[in-house]
Image (cartoon, rainbow, N blue to C red):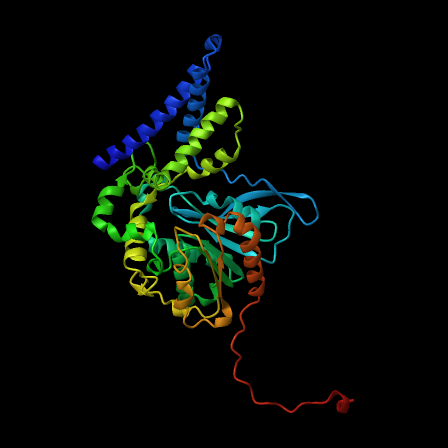
Length: 432
């Protein structure tokens, strides 16, 4: 119960700050106070507006906001987000473009489950839509999933991906971003052993920790320093009574957000101070650069405790993927069984989350995959965000990925059957 109390205490603090911001904005904007001409009232109203919005969006799931795209015919095509496969902990959704025939490229974008919603990849999806049929893994907030739905750990995550790939069929191309890279690799290896015909044509693995020890970062250092007991004691709480998942053990999104913010506290503090001044001067807008970024960045979701803890223990501490020792329900998942799926690794030279080398380790695990089906790209000057949604993605990486997809779209050649005994050839000329 004390974990429920601390969870509710965090939510109460968030709610109180949102209320304080709304109150300050309303009070300082009271018409009668305008007679005083006191600039502090304007600043108080601006502080209240920024504070209310900041704490309010922490519990709101952002909208995809992709309304339409321009087709090759120059016409706008409306986009519908449709659920294709519905599961308790996450859905497979399709961005269905109206009045457009199926595209040659069918892409599954595997979104991270690392504190933010799948909408973090909004710009990635929007950039792919004009050229591809796009599907995305849309993970659910653990606080909204009843305890009766059961557990969800790294093995369940991997089986979800395998199920989604089975549904989409073998002509699929996978793009995995950040956290799900090692588990996507495991899902395809699982299919290679259990259902080879369901394997995708290609995988593009972008900035993921396949081997966390390949290059140290602050994230890997933390994983080494803390023990599992300490992590469970410090990070895990029970969802409070306000949500459907009451009683479920989770790593709360608000705690994750605190970790995100403290990593670059000075930069975030400066960003909010400058935004308050812009609001006070009347220079801010609802969709300015600050709000576009923080509407997404501050929207956090709870992770199930078992998923978070098993990720730290099995992926980071024990390096099960890196050692090719990952198992599902006790059965080994052998990366060496991947023999037909083309794999491209993309890393950013300045990535401080998954440093160069961590994702590249995937190619060494694919011992039975021909060298012709392996590729890698290191983007100069790119950080973690840039390799899937920033300038580097838009200008360099996206074209590389599309060319890689096109180069590996043909079905893999099947082994020829033993030649039958030759029969005498009949000449049509002779028969005439």
